[in-house]
Image 1 (cartoon, rainbow, N blue to C red):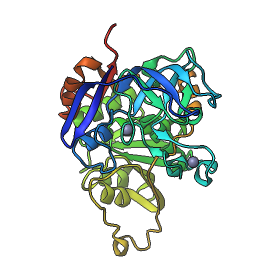
Image 2 (spheres, protein in one colour; image 1 turned 180 degrees about the horizontal axis):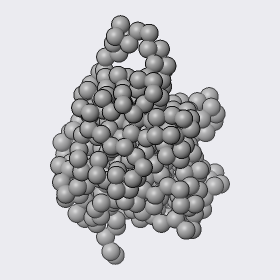
Image 3 (cartoon, rainbow, N blue to C red; image 1 turned 90 degrees about the vertical axis):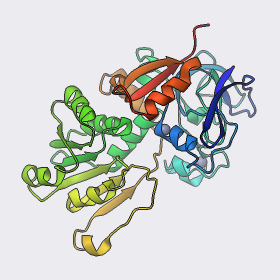
Image 4 (cartoon, helix red, strand yellow; image 1 turned 180 degrees about the vertical axis):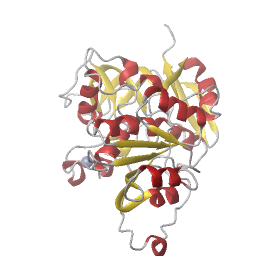
Length: 347
Ligand SMILES: [Zn+2]
Ligand SMILES: [Zn+2]
């Protein structure tokens, strides 16, 4: 089968590999019917994910059909359509028992697929701990609707949840990239009084306005002044920092009103400074990121009920054989791309 493979820093290539087989009784083999490219894949490509293992198939956003299951797997069976979770977790350790699956202590736990073990930009993938890592897709939900459930939509859902949003709140989201847009949809489920999206790219601001006319959009240089005139207490009640830019963490806390909650979802390329003397007396609460992706079943129910729809984020689709072109488009942010779906080549 064809597998898009991390050979060495700056080198990804489509190579021929044997189909994966069951290795553990808790494994499943999934035939990939749709996958996607994530910014984290680009981080691997650029050599900035040291634990990424050369030789692995990349890709951690995918949906598919279960082909085979180990004897200990009980929640799915061959023929089931499933979403695959970006995180591998055992379900039994202290952290898993508390719902903090991102910190699962199992040797296979955490972001393994498409990083330390073979992932989903291919035809078949082995999923460890399949009872935890797979969720059945409801019959009325398409592959495209379910594509982001295991990764960026799980992240947005988790971020909106931990931000503890109230009905009177002004919620500011920094960044309208793919994860920011998923976060926006999940924030709207909490029905805050007002939502503001701050984004540098005018095309992405227009995308937000087209799909969510009730949401305010502003550029980073306007956001502080906008919040002064559109809030009653000198800033946003909740700030979700999803941009991960060089200055966006500083902007995040400056945009927060005193006693606000700042939720940091972004993954930064560099260390960030927490300027405590400058923020003294503001009494902020910070929450830091790393999705606990264990509520995919709930997310799928919301999609089935028509309350979440991330299909507009899929701006382009390519066959697996042309994945190189898809990466170039995504990486160079050409042609208004938000997300690219990769489908199997017609057999
Ligand atoms: Zn990702
Ligand atoms: Zn665990």
